Image (cartoon, rainbow, N blue to C red; front, top):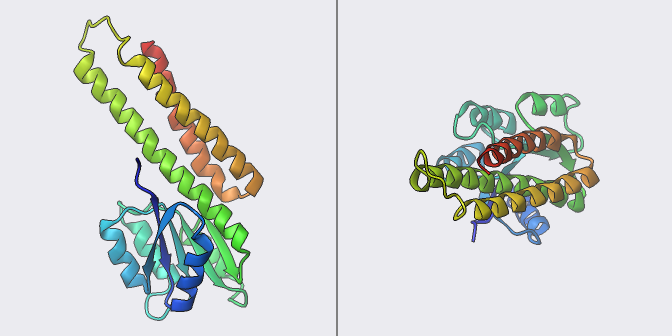
Length: 209
């Protein structure tokens, strides 16, 4: 069974972290707390996250600076970030958030359903990317070990690979439907990337069939 997706919650206020955990409690994921930008960067050194919920207003290293550090690191630059801040923030906060690499920006108090829906889809995308990478690796490994040049019998592995690819394709269709219902433009780019990668993998597999 695959590990559950981990979500990094970054906020200097304990009550906000508790509230976020309560909102996300119905989702099958693992929330990880960080009470400062520095603590968040340390957590990112050794743990892989599907998404970061990042408060803008924090003492010391604020959300924008934290995001800049995250995006500069090769290991973490592709982790999606959703900025969270209060409704009376400066009018340029949204622009600065997107400029810092955020995929979305929510103001407090936010609708719990909206936050859950956004987090759910990003967690699904992360899980699908992991699964797709595993299938691609398995395809390469089995071709290298079980199908040497000139081998003619592929019947032992191709049906299983086809079944796994079809399962990922079905799941992608379901996630696309969730994204369509959420009407979230931030999901367009990752969904397009995932669709293209899956199409390339399917084309490579079909060439073997």
